[in-house]
Image (cartoon, rainbow, N blue to C red; front, side, top):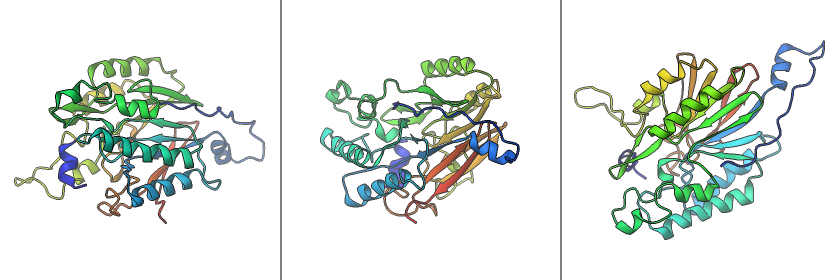
Length: 314
């Protein structure tokens, strides 16, 4: 898939049981106590799976490694763009892509998984036929059905962490724009206010809210030297969201995918992580130097977060 098309197209499963930390022993080191009260989650994004041998084998290898006894986290967060593309694909081709996704997940995954919707997961945005727009599967209904999601956006809690999963890609004249719609904003504001003050908060979005690598996606600046940052690559409502986040000091981190690049930005005390892509350069190797990878996150009781990028091909 080429970059121009990418720019133009700009579930919850049952969670595992919470594990309560044991009593601190006299000989136990403080860092050991912190580790004992943490949990791990894999953030995988932009799998872009399709019915080809290379894509299926690559996804299978990544999911198998995540589920291995040596690695095995507590749960998975799917950051979106599970399939290659549903924006302008026939029902037959979309179903073929979902068949591969579901087959690999059934064969290889035994972990709880929480899903975020990506722009390429939405069906029919670039199709003009009236019957597509009227189809019950149009828009995000199909991806929600495949993932078993009851809502486009939702929250869940693990230990003393609350996760808010957003729906960040909205249809825009046949393409898409990175923002949350007004009902979702109202839900976000209300949900943030309802989180206990002693709970830490992690916000998940497919498209970054704050990011540096969004500016690095294009190969060149504009002719006048201005940066090229598409409204499909960074939340256009980022200022509004950042202002909202300032009201809630227990927001610790935000996780995203979409860009196929990796970065870490701290802004007003919140750490924003953009976490690469399982598919790399859409199953064509590394993308701008970043090999196919997923992120291994450790969430600590004190609100700290650690990330390690895993290049699963190695």
